[in-house]
Image (cartoon, rainbow, N blue to C red; front, side, top):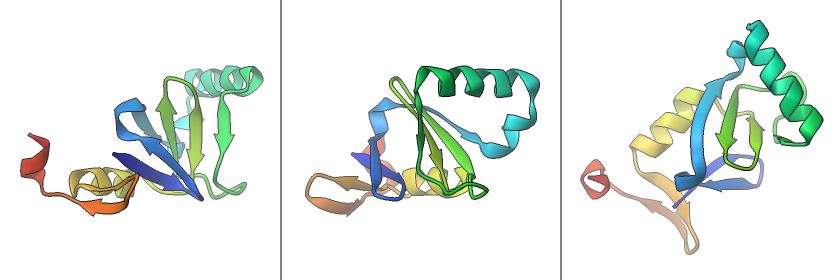
Length: 96
């Protein structure tokens, strides 16, 4: 299953390590982490400048998303994701 994280980008749900609010970038340690990630070429900008709401961390990239953490969490919890065939909606029971 894939999660739509903004723009035309979908990420395999199994590859997502964390989803972090853009507000956390105020922390010195977090800023340093993202500075290094930018310098190393790991950041993928999906959101327009000033529209960043969350960071989706995977093992390969960090996606800067215009979609809030809350919305991404709801999409996962509701079982709304993309498969190769299209949009699927599953209940919580299917994930247990």
